[in-house]
Amino acid sequence: MKFTKMQGLGNDYIYIDLFTEKVTEPEELSRRMSDRHFGIGGDGIVLMMPSNCASARMRIFNADGSEAEMCGNAIRCVGKYLYQHQRVHSQELTIETKSGIKRLFLETSGDQVVSVRVDMGEPILERESIPVIGDSRHIMNEPITVNGETYRYTAVSMGNPHCVIFVPEITESMVTIDGPALEAHPNFPRKINVEFIKVLDKNHLEMRVWERGSGETMACGTGASASLVAAVLNGLVQRKVRVQLRGGELEIEWDESSNHVFMTGPAVEVFGGEWPE
Image 1 (cartoon, rainbow, N blue to C red):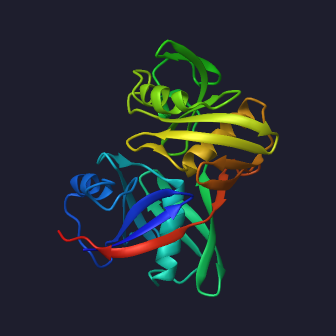
Image 2: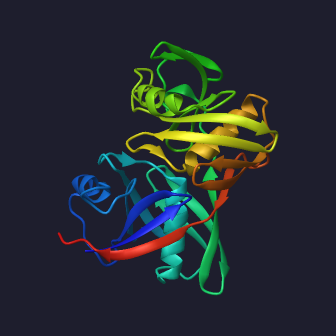
């Protein structure tokens, strides 16, 4: 089976083209292929396939085999792959995901895609739709305690759930110790992605993320989008910011007229190969 390794700001997945290949057990395949010692190594696998309602469809499986609804870095890579491998021929395309159809706008130079702008849709703020257990309709600056440490978080869904925490400084223990404890907190019935955010100025955020099912990753597009929404709701930033992640920088904008969040960033094809089974 042929595969392509791609990354968006270091958020790396193994991409399988189901226009020509066949996968029967994606959960187990993702666990084996994603292993960084005994497999190819990655944050998971992404399956690309035909769609009845969009230019193409994508399915994302995390490194632990769980299926994710959406991934901002992965969808940029999908757009680049589909265009450069001639599965689509337009610089504007739609991708069917578990969280709905997303629209992509490709910036090209010659026949190469240099960056991708993604319409991430409207943020979801209602507690039961994220989902988060509790009584209030929205979750903004709400306390939560793990490992004896109390944080205040704002919850946002961008098709997948996010717990956004603003801190003066981001520490290693926050991400690697409290991150997994927050991911599995009983408040979150489907677990949650956790973003630790330092506000640098009104137009610039620094972010580290603990991703549900994958652990800490170099970048998270839906997390960056959710973090901008949370920062705007808390009165911390303007509606268009640069988000600095461990793997690089994304431009995120929450358009006031449409209520849609737009994410712009790179996508890189690293190498291709064949999986023996």
